[in-house]
Image (cartoon, rainbow, N blue to C red):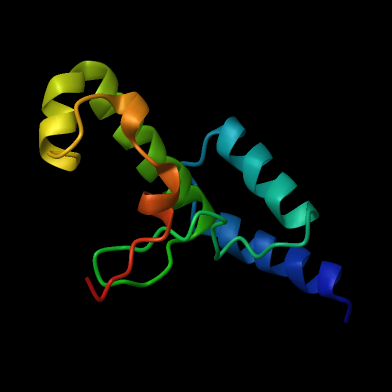
Length: 103
């Protein structure tokens, strides 16, 4: 079985667990898999509370939730998530993506 075939099989199995996935999420995860990636991984290095890598759709939902939280209350978001920063523009996305669970 080729890598592409394995990934397509993973995608079919993965999507069975996401009956609530939106059409945008499905399109995005299909593109992710088409590029040679597993749906059980994310390209941002995002981990859950137990330091396990999050899957693709849950990572999308995590980032969307963070963005919605910021839109609703930018000052509160900055105070909670970035207390040593004064503006959203000062955030370094690489510092979030390279967070170590050992810290």
